[in-house]
Length: 363
Image 1 (spheres, rainbow, N blue to C red):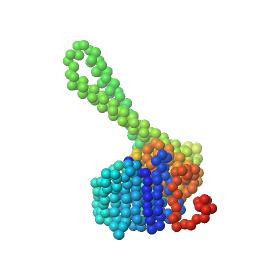
Image 2 (cartoon, rainbow, N blue to C red):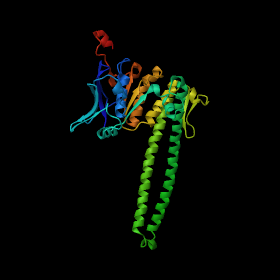
Image 3 (cartoon, rainbow, N blue to C red):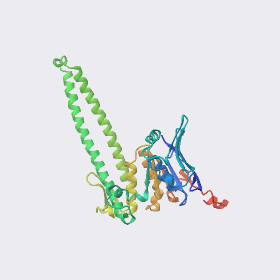
Image 4 (cartoon, one colour):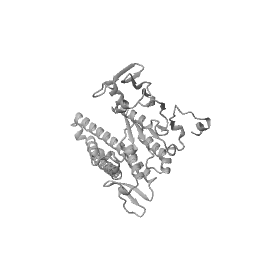
């Protein structure tokens, strides 16, 4: 199940926005000035699918709708002091009161949420997420550099585990293959030994063949996982090396990601620029933490990125999407992020503005 469109009426008492999601490119860009509701739209959408309804209780609006590819839609509406969540489809409709909701969701809502995963990435918080989860540091701006370094170290360690698992799986696969070869050799010799053929137990042969078949299935699954992990690791390193200046990035089974200067000097993660650290954490999250078929919400990806990196961001993102199979909705006010992808953009408009023709054309 995929989300095809989002709409909101009278957001902050002013804005009516309708946002069709690009089904082909799989990237939709919300573009507009500060204050038009880009971030709150992402927050509301994320809250709806992750059972956090605070934004709906606090933000003025009339109704918020999410449309699906099977023609049904979810709607949160506020009327006469009531906050109601409903689902409408061809076969009928369901309703629940969000103000009276205390714990858990209705079964019909759980079923809808199980069909789609929504994940919000606030770029400004990439540097604090690891610290919040580990309680190592308070989530305040004074710890920005140090906490962002913790996030980089966290994903570097994750990379080390991934490389280690891949190599370990390959060793295990070789061991299993050797065992299978020995077993097949023994069975082949037995079947060609006329003195033993009459004493063969059909059930024992069936059990041996079933074992071989299950082991081959395990090997096939492991090989698929190995290939997927390997190409994602290669993609991460390639993306970083495409942007990092005067240094190279490598993956290592012992230390994870390592950074070397052009003369081979080891560069500590704390010495990476904030933009480099943001790139590393963001693309690591996208490549390794997001399930397939998800809708990923990214708020202001331009933070800490040089203009050149902003120009390349959507191309890099499209590469990750094609590999990992998910959709992305971006909120930005950076024309450099949009760059030449105007057909992916939904431009949020001010319904109260009275533009002249010249100004409207320029906008």
